[in-house]
Length: 252
Image (cartoon, rainbow, N blue to C red; front, side):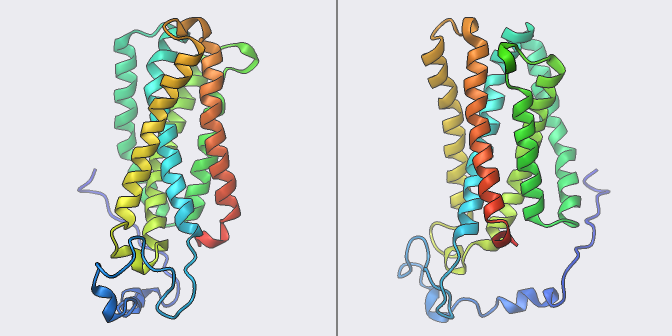
């Protein structure tokens, strides 16, 4: 599939062909010394205007949230699948394996869509689908979700967070100020730290809520654990959705 894949033509606007030449003089000559520059880059452009950092914060929070939700969903899946539907370890392992393999063709779909739609549209759409997936996994009315609902929700959350990562990284590389591209805290470091912190909090949330609600007998309160845990993930994703909507124009 990788050999046969051909990237679709990008819909460039007028003047985009000269994009590389336009950025050749973005950095002044005296700015090449990374020791004399601030750690997070300068707060002004070469023309003296203020740099709009809001798009950068949106993408960083998106990278944190998607890893927080993704890690929490995957790490908690064995517990919920065993207590809700009596799944064996073998079934859980096969499901996680199939879900991971399914992300390979999903990345090709994201690459094709990225050539036709803007990154902000894809990011916002993935956030909305992630909210829908988390709602499918909630224990509403004090009852466990149906098996098809929970499985579809888990797949939807996992798939949309994978796609969100691509869109967020693309936006971050485009919106990060020029001074930060050559500073210590560049886009790669910021994305790595945000994602790692999100994974850490995802696992810590499972441990914390499990200790508070059930201790060593979590199965007795698994419905409440589902409601509290996925409610937390849903709240974090909803905040990201609103934040992206507020800053939508700046992400263009």
